Amino acid sequence: MTVAATNPATPAGERIDYASTLSPRTKALVLAGVMMGLFLAALDQTIVATALPRIVGELHGMELFAWTSTSYLLASTTMVPIYGKLSDSFGRKTVILAGIGIFLLGSVLCGFAGSMLALVIFRGVQGIGAAAITSTAFAVPADLFAPAERARYQGIFGTVFAASSIIGPILGGVLTDEVGWRWVFFINLPLGAIAVAFIVAKMPRLHSGLTSRVDWLGALTLIVATVPLLLTLRGDRPLGAWLSPEVLGMLGVSLVGLVSFILVERQNPNAIIPFALFQNRVFTLVILTSVCTGAAFFAALLFLSIFAVNSLGATAREAGMALMPLTAAVVLTSLFTARIVSRTGRYKIVIVTGLVLLCVGLFLLRTLTVESTLWGIGVRTFIFGCGLGPVMPMLTLSIQNAVPPHQVGTATAGRQFFQQLGQAMGSAVFGIILTSTLAHALVDTLGPVRAEAPAAMHAQFDRWFDPERLRSGGVVQESPGEGQRSAGDRIADEVRAAYEARRREPSADADALAREEAQALAVVRAGEQAVRVSFARAVTRVYDWCLPLALCALLLALLTREIPLRKGNAPAPAPAGD
Image 1 (cartoon, helix red, strand yellow):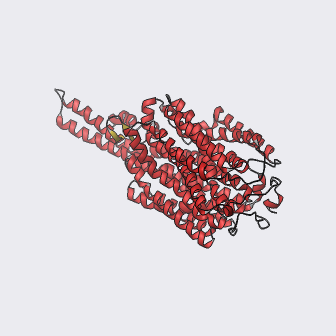
Image 2: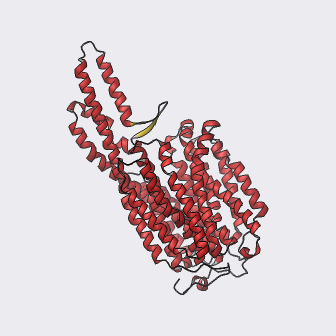
Image 3: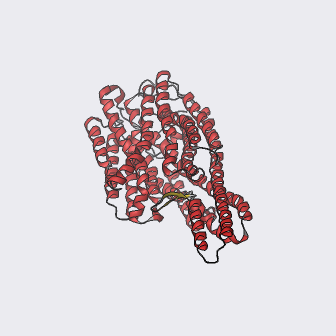
């Protein structure tokens, strides 16, 4: 049974085939404008992250630090499938222009924010706009090119995110240091103006020509199902807090929203995410693959900097540089494999090969120790990036090729939604694994060091190496006026100052104090090394769990049927069972 043949949501009308009616020059200009808009949304995350320490220092709201990203992710994830449906109903041009407008409004409001709470709210406004940009941008190549030609353009779109990860931190640092952190938001205005100029001047409506109603009740129930769930998915939440009334209440609300969404959408011919799509085996398997890969790769990137800083003693800048090979690999492989798919029409082998390399990269990341180097991290992340680069754009291509053309926007946004949902769930689950493993590792590694220390030092040792403080702050932190220093460095300075004061006492025994000081410093260094080992053990345990998830994604990809890429954008019925 095919989706195209049985889906009651298929509206009557004649679809516009822009792939055959637009000139190559017009297509290129449209793509330039859309890519500029996509770059705008992708750049925002990395450029803001660089400025956050300065922002917190000025606005004073450390307790809301994480919410500056959470509110953005919450809004963008929730709205993605809604915008996907809207773009199928009203046209890509209308939705992407509205998204850029909302995003720029949020940017201006963020730039003028007078408090951390205001910044968190305005970042949510940015997220609402970003969702429209990203969900629409990845569907535009499906309107402009037939599936057989589409691969190279999906690959180019994938490189936009990689480029933003390079440019964002550099530009954010320069703007923050030279003209102030508010300009990391104001810089969006000229970039957005260029994108709008391209889109308004050259982009047609990119409307399917088919009519359908917007399912606002479905959109509301989707928001009720998604928002409480995402609010509870915090990796820094203690294990016991997951059973608190607050969390259980939020999950209960989310469950009610999910049940309501299913009841509303099951028989709705204009559903936000048509249930008939899940009858398409390719769509379902790609969605599941996206959830697994989203969780695996996001966790790998999220915790790698924790390892570099807290296990190897790298600075934040050095940790960022260690990820540069990954970015280079993503750019190179996404472009290279896109050309291969364009020439051969075979995309499944690219997805499978990419997932194999991704699994190899995760396996190698499991082998990291405190003896590893930043160069070693770079080699591992390069292999990981070689797998990641081709997978994401080709998954988008495969799902677009498997659904009717009038549902491309909905299907593309659906894949993006479930991938981001996988990222959120992965960060929460792997965050729990990290914190619980770290708690046990700190007890195991610090216990022998404490036992070797003189009894007189036990109280000080417990204060220096408090597990709760180490779990929340790590080994390396920023010290005002001193730059980045390790906990061991600061404790050693404290020990030296204390013994220097004792040496100035009239009855001081210099030789005895020197021996005591050397012993105390040795305990400090041993304690710091134990903490570094603990962080290494905790992060590699995360990779132990990431690897099976990536292997599941590989298995799902192997089970996914490859449908020959269509030569045109006219609807083509899928084989029975797909």
